[in-house]
Length: 376
Image: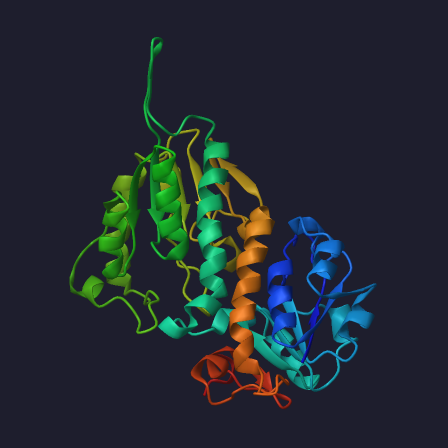
C-alpha cells in the first residue's frame, strides 16, 4: 500500500499526520510512504528526518498523492486538495463531520473512502486509535496553561517574608478526557481545584485527582451517561438546578475551564452572562467548546473577550499549541488504525466487517454511510 502524508494548509494548523517513528513502522510493514515537503516543519520534524525513516519526500501535494492508496491528514481535505485526489483513494483525518456535511458530500461524490478519526468507537480495542482522546488530553493541559497566563497571578500558595499569596481557585466544568487533564494540571500548579460533570462515573475520577466534586446528585444524575461514555442531554429541570448550584460556586472562582461537548449538537450553555458578571475582575474563563457555540455564550472563537474585567478565551485548536506532542500522538493513532485497512498481502482492503472500521467510515463507494449523517 502506498501512503501519502500531506502538509496541512489550514491557517494555524502546525500538526502533521506522521512522524519518523510511524513512517519507519509503516515501511517495516512493507508499505511505501510519500511525505510532502515541509509537512513536519512546524512540528519540529525536518524532511531529512522523514527521509532517514524511509519516506520519499515529494515537492508538492500532486506528486505526493500520485498513486496513493491511503492519504493521512490531520484535518479534512481542502478545496485545492480535492482537485488532486482520485476515485478509489482513501483518506483518514479529523474531519469535524457534524459541522461540515458538505465535506462528506464532496468526499462521496469524489469516490473517496473517508475515515473520520472522531468516529473511532470508544471501546477497549480502539483505545490506541482514539484521536479525540489523545488530542483532548493535550487540550486540557494547555487550557490550564492559557488560563494561568491570562489570570496574571500565581497559582500555588506562596508563603514569603512579605506575606502570603493565596492559591488560585480553579473550577473545571466537564470531567471527560480534557477536563480530567485540566484538573491534574491545575493541581500540579498548586491551585485549589473543583469540578463538575453530569456523568456519575466522573465523581470518583475527580476525587482521585484531589479535586472537589460539584453536582446536583439526583436520580437523573445517576442515569446521565450513554453506553459510549458520553454525557446525555439533561432535562431543563436538572439544568436549572445545576445552574443554581454552579452560580453559587462560580462567584468564588478565579479560573473556570469549560469542556462540555455533546457529539453532533451545539455546546450546552454552562456559564451564563449573569454568572460571568458575578465573577471578580481579573478572573478568567477558558471555553474549550467555543467552536460549537461555547459553554459560555459570551465566548468568541480564538478571541479574548473582556466582560467587566473577566477575560473569556475560546481557543478552537489548543493541541496545535503543542504541535510536536500532538503530532506524535495523532500519528500513532493513525498507525494503530492502519492494520484494519489492509489485507494479508498489505494492500489497501479495509475490513468492512470490523466494528472499528464501520464506526470510523464516513463514505464508501460514492455514498455517505455513517448513520449519524444518514439518519439510519
